[in-house]
Length: 368
Image (tube, rainbow, N blue to C red):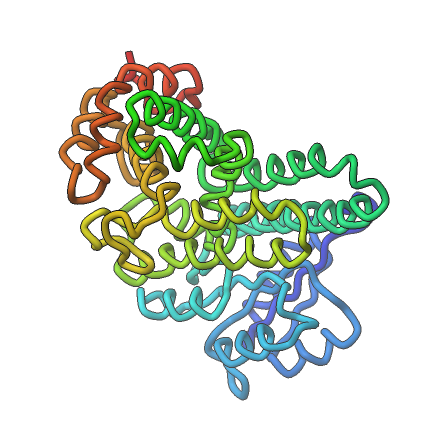
């Protein structure tokens, strides 16, 4: 965020009263352009690039949905975040807006304080995304100049990405750190017990286990409205949430094109793409079954689900360490590889200790 200028917001609504009220609420904090139609929006976009657009849906001429479609199809405007501000409040209306690419959906009449806070939060996230993109661009130039510094810079990127994901999914979370520790414990015990030991020993442990930090990278594409929803997701919202797997694979695939960190990214893509597959074939996105699921996905499934169970989420209370372990054990042969669950049984105390040591302070009362 530039400190020497106000961020620009374009407010698009065919109601003069709404434009006047919106400008009154926001003008003390932002440079506000009050525009009475989508046609005026595109006229101003020729001269000014806003940091965010507040868009009404029901307007004469181009409505909000049509406007969003045009924005997302034009490379000049596709990355401008859009929040729908509208009286259309049904679940299907919200789903349609989010599916078209809106980052949020605010219904009228709205609270001025709530609207300001949502705008502030989204602009903060957009600023972090821009910083991350700038960092990546700078990194590529540095790699060409000094390949000897690649490994350290790689770690900086992954740390930045995972920090951003943790901020969005759980502002105080240590999920990525905990799951990596669980994986390390599982990998060590698999070798000791001779379970899939040959494959685990073939891995470069530092590279493979570190790459697991990117397993949820696709969540960066999921709206905060869904990601931090305090209740159960609707079927439509869950379908959107499930896309974080394919989005993560796509993002890592784009990184691979540069030809760097090939082994690291190869395993990262497997973790991202298969950690929601289930042993009995009922998982997603591909419905893989049994040992067709890569080993990375099978061990990540246990680490990821255990951590989801033992920590508090917006939609659930935390389970105790004992309850969480029992759910994993009961899932053998259905959700999880039974051979790996057999190894996990020996590690329930170690998993609980990891959860306690790297607790984010929320919902770990049962870990003792």
